[in-house]
View 1 (cartoon, rainbow, N blue to C red):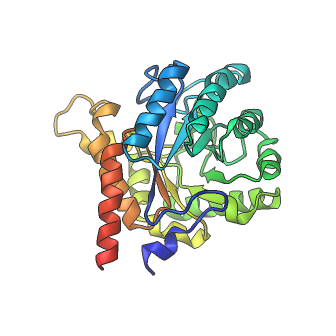
View 2 (cartoon, rainbow, N blue to C red):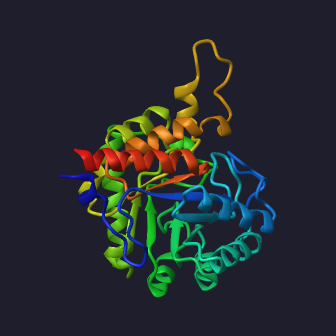
Length: 287
């Protein structure tokens, strides 16, 4: 089966002839990769527009860090961070996704112009999320998730990580669809780095094609994550390279994900990944 057929389309979003590139704007002071850099609304909007100029197809705006060990922010603060940035980018014609686990933030972001809700909990963190997304009639990213950041490392226990992630994602998809979200609006995400160690993440990247068994478009979010730092750590190194030095490794995973038929990849630094997915598409077309 060709990757062009496995990639799929999402109702309510543009169709791309290759793996799409989702740029990340973290409106947080404590993101693992770029905390504080885009915390100001004006700076965050400018950064989102820069990501588009670098080749992003859509921009994911989040106001709560989900790095391991991160504490949650309250809803009012998340709204204060996110909504002006969503509004500013949408007013410039950007296809905007909102990265949130809260139904009220999702609702207000959609009202401000967001066209996709990316919930790392797959609707588990807030019981009002699925009804809210169903009512808004927007696409919904269902990620594999086993708990909040404070405790997720302790949940990284698997017998067969690929089979278990697929099974748990299937159950979550079924719950989301039963809750009223149209199947054609569902995107799946294996949740690299969430309740997974480096070996689990690498195993999932090696078996991305198996996630197509779920029948929905696949989002891969490997950007700058710990498992890439683990891969890049040389013999005798005291510590892995910092997050911002993992962009070339991220682009490598983006090419692999595109080759495996991913619908989109989510990245902090866009230019290298935009090049990588275009090369992957050209190779696919030449096959």
